Length: 596
Image 1 (tube, one colour):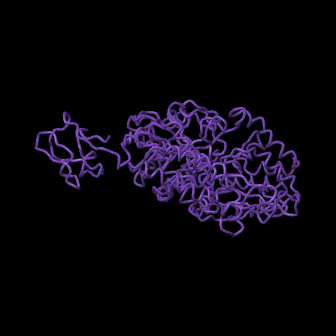
Image 2 (cartoon, one colour):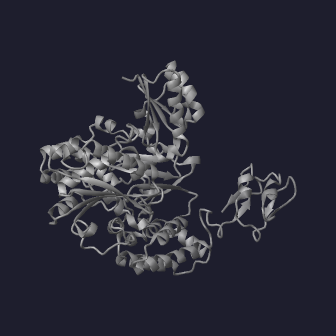
């Protein structure tokens, strides 16, 4: 029995900041001090508060240490572990105000409104140790369905829970399982979509890294329910830690008889293999993913037939994404009514978001459906850095839309987001402030879509390229009357004619920014001005005369000698020479230089 547990984040974010060296140093010092029988060091998955990584939590005190460096480990061991004194200056406190008492995790604003279901074990267990997963009721749900429930009862439980697919479209999970169950075939497959391609999204990766057995258990349950004996996990090769831990988990589950033949002494056989994706965004679309699993170039197929009827190798295939699966074991163990008690009437349960952009607390959050955008941005995310104003939040990645400040109190659920021109997507939530140009944001996402289009259908391949050309023209100051109308016409044509869901939703960032920020498009076109001062070719940098002290620092850093003047008198900028690099703004100590 250990008296202390030292939990160290081993997710990708903290690993990139030397958390593995921190673990090594802890283990080294624990051994040197003869504490190996008393203190256990645990490498976990992501704790969520990525902005403050690397994160270390010491139990039983629950001391939450953040931004730990390797050299801090010696103090934590000597003071906290040996002498029992928490190292207060390394503890996380709200607003960085150091207090005598370390806050409990549940008291920290970032965690107060969260409710972890899909992420329940992330940051809690060692993802490479199956015994720890089992200790937290792991594989208990699989045992229950195999020994106590019929296939129909499993599907009915999932249907009654109200769980909807967390991959973006929000299709009812139980209904999808029922379709695959009713399909007649000598062979069926279960697949997991771990091809997380949205910019800024890392929800699926964190589940794989922090709780891989939850996905394996859920896939086995799905295999039993629909009558499949083979599963495939499609995951990006760019996720090496996730791939490694998945393979370790599969090997451990096979060793324990939880995958393979005659699981739990029944006649149910189920195996899982990993398939690596090469990073094509289109392979997040289910039919393109299936084509890639089969060993072909990832391109979407016309639907119908849907995968539940004709999927991998032409056989019925039940396909869900990572977060959807992560909910399944808990639904089986706790019941459909338990899951129904969370969220809203049409969007049950919780949702995981990767919170990024202009936000204080970047990281991974899980909240009940119906939580408002304002609560996520301000109560959990800590608001906008530097006292800037909130401008918009982008949900759904390149397929989604922008939520303006006027809709900050919109509850986050499938129907509410659709009603305001956005969508849930897989769970990326990018926050923007007053310095972001919404025309440029639309251009950024469209650039991504153009690069990632598989090229199979003309509307996506050609239409998005034409839209991008118009946006480039507008942000370069060459916009013309009628460009907005052309964008809208192209967008609506692509939405109605593209082959797959990714192509059909590609115009969404443009349409949503036109809906809420049309004035910015008009300013770019008719006034040749970027209201946010972001677009270089439309920006104008000026020196405010009554603030300028005449120190000449701006003229000395200007790379094109566009600034001139006399010492102790206001300097001026020659607009014909200025390249809008912003070097003068960064160096001015008096806030006398502004970008318009």
